[in-house]
Length: 110
Length: 114
Image 1 (cartoon, rainbow over the protein chains, first blue to last red):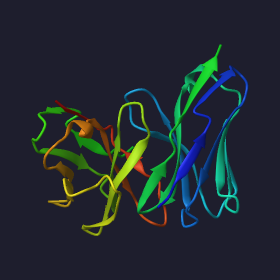
Image 2 (tube, one colour):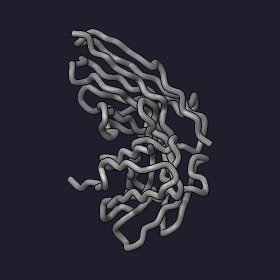
Image 3 (cartoon, chains in turn blue, purple):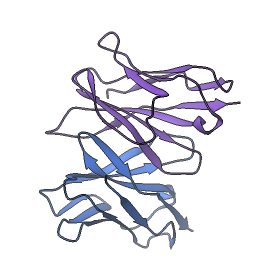
């Protein structure tokens, strides 16, 4: 089955700086790679996703890159703001289900 | 915006009891899922359901678990004999299908087994 590794587990950045979270996956059949933001006690909220036929996608301050050859994908958040503080999960899979990484606790320092 | 609805939001049950968690997926979605999240841990896949049958399940989804779509709108997860370690947040999700994923998660049911 799929195995997703996510790093780092905790990331502390100064407000206004960039944050990068990285994930690797093992199953070459995975073709959908979403990123979720989760606040305490709430559901995962999709913030951006990328499909296997695309190498990069950007939505305002958030971007995701995918390297299918190396089986890794990354989340980039620029100009971080206090409301970006949360746990972020990457996931990999397809229509039959997603495998999640262990999460990154992003802390934005004022 | 369409939502996936889950009930109840919180359920407390005694060990050994059966529980049924309920979900109403988005009406035009074709794929349905259950995930669970133990407090402070990652989200774990349990099962996917398509065309009225299970399409994939994880090792967690053993004989104590079952899913059903009894009436074309509800999607339920049953745990036959709950254990303490079943305590977790259970999320239902649905997806349009293989050409356009975009999973939508419900707000979850917090199951506490005592």
